[in-house]
Image 1: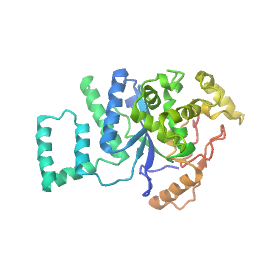
Image 2 (image 1 turned 30 degrees about the horizontal axis):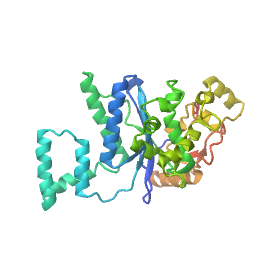
Image 3 (image 1 turned 120 degrees about the vertical axis):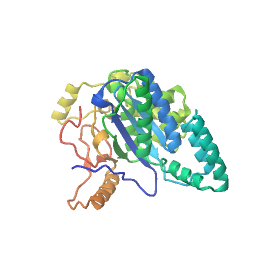
Length: 331
């Protein structure tokens, strides 16, 4: 089933998206300096757009980000000005003069101020605008620094709508944080400085707040309280101190699949699971069924389509996707 690129989101609650994009030809052109610039710009633009980064992973040829987009609400003029200063911490003389005019007109209700307000609000509370602004800004920096021109990214971006709580959210987050482990760069994501979990372990408050939101335990609302719970999701029971023990080779995984065997969830998350990148919608069966109904209504599709459970290679819980994958789903 082919799904169109459209945002399926609730009108009564926030929406969570797993977004991913690759460099042209998957070239490994992002060194540590580039990753650090990207990381800083990502947090900066998230603040401006009013979205919440839950976790992320920046690799040498692609990146993942799990982002919660709150419901759109009214934004006070003072907050718009603050966000604008976040986006342009070192404004040009023209921008500085322009914002002073806008600041005065915001007080008096001028037409230029109203136009400026609408321009800013159009870029906020929208995952597409967040990703567009992030990729454009980083491309400008990268091209200027490396004396190159043209596109840096091979595609617009992929996105999967994720059920924003419970087992689904923590499983998706762990899959993203484990990217450097799958790549063989580290045994523990806390040792890879360009992922959300490592930034949280380092003590960054925004990253820690993301992990707290991911675990969403009513009895633990602090980083100290949720840290061990999230490590259980990353490594499984019994491997908290020996994370490397959960690794598996692609050949071994293929054998398990062929024999209809099962593996611990922490082990499977160290393998490539394309459903997390290409499943369109990821959640419990009821959540996916709800958005399948929206899909049929928007496209006029009359064929009944059911939520597709993930392969029974591990205990996923009540986890399903909107789009089935015919081959290379695991590996």
